[in-house]
Amino acid sequence: MTVDFNRLKHFSMTYVFMDDEEIACEYEQTEQSPVVAPDGNSVSFTLRNIDQSEDKDLYSVVLVKEGDDEFYIKSDYFEDADEPYPLDVEISDDDVKFILEGENEDMYLYGFFE
Image 1: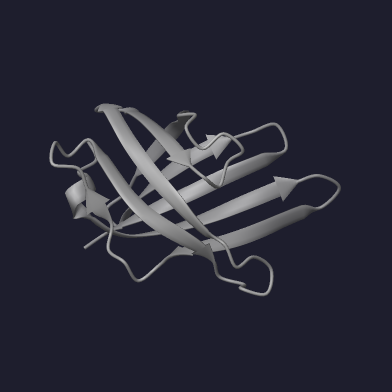
Image 2 (image 1 turned 120 degrees about the vertical axis):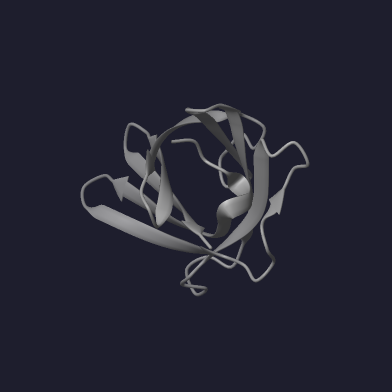
C-alpha cells in the first residue's frame, strides 16, 4: 500500500528521549492545513508543542516520498534543517506512522486520513 499525501489531513508527533529516564514531547499540527506539492511527492506543515510552557517554537516539517516505500523528513526541529532523514513507515486504515529512530531518541510522526 502506498501513501497518498493528499489523503492525510492532520499530523501529530511524539518525540521520545531515552536517557536516564524516558521523556516524551507531544507536538500537534497548527491550524494551517498541510500543503501537498503539485506532483504529490511531498507535504509541508507546521507543528507546535502541545505544552506551550515547555516550548513555544513552531517547527516546519516537509515529508518527501521518493518511491512507494521510501520516505524522508526535513525539519527545522532538527539541528540540520536541510538534512533529509530516512523514515520507516507503518500504514493502517486510520493513519500512517512515520518512524525515525536515533541513538537516544525515537520520533513517531502520525498522519491521519480524512
